[in-house]
Image (tube, rainbow, N blue to C red; front, side):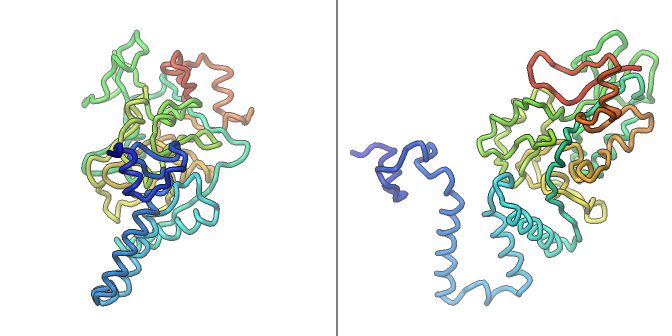
Length: 332
C-alpha cells in the first residue's frame, strides 16, 4: 500500500521525480497553492457558464467588476516579491475596490524606502505626562478598529524609582501626571534583528531598508507566531472585522500601512509609513503636547534623534535579547 505522502502526490498529480523540498507537509508545491485554487475555480466558473448560469446573467456590470477585482486581489503575489508594475496594479485595484465596496475615495501609496534613511525613535521620560493624545492620534491615523478600541501604543504609569514597564500600569483612569509616577510609552520597536520576522511561515512580515518592520496583510494567515515571538508585545490580532466608518477613515494610505485590514490578520505600528516616507512625523509625534516623542533619520548626523543618542544618557528595553530596537528612552 502506498504511503500517505505517495498517495497525496498521486492525488495532486505530482511527479515522483520532483524534489521533495519543493513541497509543504501536505505534498503541495509551496508556491502554487493559489494557482491551483485559481485553476480549479476558473474551471468551475466555465462549467457554470456552460450551464447557462454565468455571472453575466445574474449580476450587473459594477458587481462583475467588483468580483473580478476581488478575485485578482486574492491571487496577487506577496508585496515584497512584486515588480514595481505589479505593485502599481495592486494599488489601483485596492483603490477601485474601496470605491465599489464602500464608496470611499482613498489614495494608496506604494512608495519605497528612501535611500540613505534609517528611521529611529526616542522617548523623553521626563516630559511625558500620560495624556494619551498619542494613542488617540494613532488610532485615527492608522484606521484602527473603533469597536475594540485597538491601540498600537501603550503608555505605562510607573512608580518613581524603577524603570521597568513590567511593573507599570497601562490601564490607569485618573488625572495625570501624579507626583508618585512617571510615564513610558511602548509600541513596535522596529528592531534591527526583529524576532517576529523569521517565525512567519508565509513571509508576510519583514524589515524594509529604512528599518520599518512591515506586514503584507493579504499574506498574513493569522497564526500569531509573530505575536508570540515579539518581546515587546507590539503585535495586534483582529479577532473580528475592524470597524471604521467611512467618515472616520484616513484616506491617505500606504499599502504596508494604514489601509483597511481584515478579520484574522496581524497588524502593528509602522512608524506611520504613509507619513514618514513623505517626510512627515508619525501621528503620535505630532500629537504629543509635551514634545516627549522624537522621530528622525539615524543616518543624518544633524538630526535631532542623532543628537539625543550621542549627548543624552539613553537606554533601550530588553537590550540583552540582541533585538537592537530602534527605540530609545532618555531623560533631560
